[in-house]
Image (cartoon, rainbow, N blue to C red):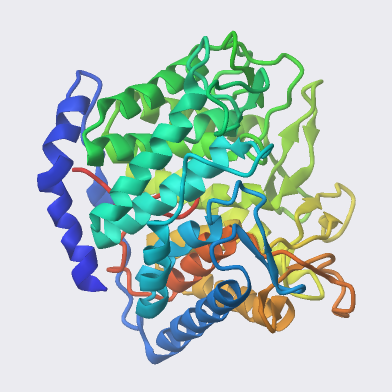
Length: 492
C-alpha cells in the first residue's frame, strides 16, 4: 500500500507543471501546508489501534462480500432482501465509490475484481427514463475513479474518469454555465429543472479541476471555475452566507430560501477551503473565512447546558435550533481550516461542535446518531432526536478523524471506536449493513431499512480505518479528501 501511496510523487511529473501554469496568477500562492500536521503520539499505532483498524477492515470485507454476492455491478446493495438496485442510473455506484477504500485497506482480490468491472461500465447510457444526478455522479463516480487513480495510477481509471466527465459536462450547457441538477444521458440535448441547490452547483470543482490537471483537458477546469464565479456573483443579502437555491437560467438566487450548512448547501462551503488548499487561489481563502465568520455569528447557537450547535435560519431570519447529521462534517472542516489558516478560535468551536455530534450518538439507546436533532432551550440536556433514522452516515466520524489528526487527542479515537461498536451491534446483518429506522429502539424487529448506501463504503468505513491508522497514511499535508472522502494529492 505504501508503495502505491509514494507512487503519487509520479503525478507531479505528469501534471504538476500544468497545474502550476493554470494557477500562477497574482491572487494565487501556496497555502501554509506545513501547518497541516498531525501530532505524533507515542502509541499512535499501538496494538490496540492496530486491532481496531483490523476490525474496520474486516467490516469493509463483510460489507463488500454482501455487495459482491447479491448486487455486484448494480448501484446499491439491499442487504435485507439480498438484492440490488439501479437508483443512480446503473453506473455501479457502490463499486466506484468503494474503489479507493478497497485499495487503501489492501483488500487486493476485491479491488482487482472491482477494477476489472470498471472497463465494462458504459457511462454514456442509463436505463430508459432514468435521469442521473449530476452532483451525485460527480462526487461518487468521477471522484471515485480519480481517488482510485491517485492510489493506483492505472490509465484505465483515468480513461473512464474522462468518460464520466464528458458525459456530465453536457449538463453545464446552460445560459449561465451552472449545471442542471439532473441529466438524461440517453438524450442528445441537455435539459433539466431551472433551479439547482447550492451543493449541487458548488460541489463539482475539486473533481473537475482534478480531472483537468491529470488529463490535461483545460476545458474541465474552465467549466468548474465558471460555476464558482456565477455562484459568487449572484444576489445575496448576507456576506459569507449563500441561499440554498439558484436559477441555472439566470444565475440569481431564490429569495425565499433559508441559510444552512446542512442538506442542499453543506459541501459548497467545504469546497471553498479545499480549493484553496489544493490550488492556492486566495479568493477561495477569502470566501471561506467570510463564510466561517457568518456561520459563527448567524447559525451557531448554544443550549443552557452549553452544547454548541449549527442550526439554520428560517425565512424570517430566526435561528432554527435543529442540526442535521449532515452538518456534523463542519467541525472537521473548521479544524482543518484552523490549521491551514492559523485560526485557533475555529479549532475551539470545532471541538465544541464535535462534542455535540458525539453526544447525539451517545444519548441514544443504540449509540447511533439520529438524522436530525433539536436543541430545546429549557431542557436540562437540551437535545432530542426529531428524526431518529440512522442512514450509516459518515459526517461525525469524518470530523473525529480530522480532529484526531489535528490535535492528537486520543479521545477522538475512543469516540470513533464506540460508534463503530454500535454499528457492528445494531447495523450489521448477515449480508452487509443496514440503515436503522429508529436509533432510540434496540429491538431490531422492523427497525432496519433495506439500504446500504455507497457512502458507507466510501466514507464511513474509510474514515474509521484512517482514524486508527498512523498519521503517515494519507497525511493531511499531502492529501485533500473530497466530500465523498476520495483522496486527491495536493499539488504544491
